[in-house]
Image (cartoon, rainbow, N blue to C red; front, side, top):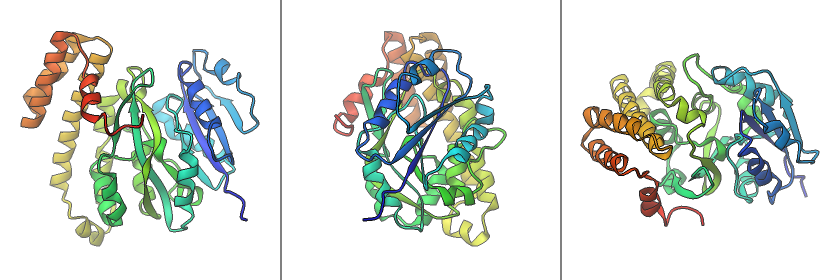
Length: 329
């Protein structure tokens, strides 16, 4: 029997004392045991390090560095990649966690050497871990889609949640490691796009990660910058050979319009987060902006958001009601 491949889990963290314990415990609970977890603490000012110190397992390595911030996030990720010993690399940020069978279900998807990356569904959870909704909703589509169809969708939107992603290390290195443009406060979308040029993106129709939805995460504080950073897709498209562009059936004009739609989604997301934290006036401002600039369907969503803001309610009870049959119990 061949030995099971080693999975190197990269865990960047910053001020996650409230969440890092559950993150680590979800790794310790894995039914697949051949892993190492590399926790890179970007100079936390809270008790993150003290929480990590409670866990005594030789497979866990904790490294604290001086704060470099999210605009240098690729340096943190690539530092962890240099430390990694495994042939497979998985991502688990310090405020997220995994279902216990994540590695067992996902590792087999990378036995095919043509696969550069595999991904699955993500369960979105509230700050206290209550399930909200899952995505992508149409995961079955990916199982029959061609690679050019998957790439087209990835250019239009980053549907790959980092907590569900596992990469072949050799493919990641061939793609230049974790990538980050100077104007993006994240590494995931640029990296996944570059990996698509190295090998296949393979779907696994299972929940492979739990992404925590909370006010103080990077994707909340920097949501507008993150939406603006989607112009990386346009630059990536420009760099592709003409025959690939033709097969993708995309134009620059369409991608630019798509960028504007993403900005509308981002503003709505900010309003939704404002509701979660009880910032009712902020929520009203954001939803009014969506109503002014968005399409008819977004005007409807904005109207619902405004109603919730005036009633001092969040939107998550609606998400749970609509998606109650779609998330894991």
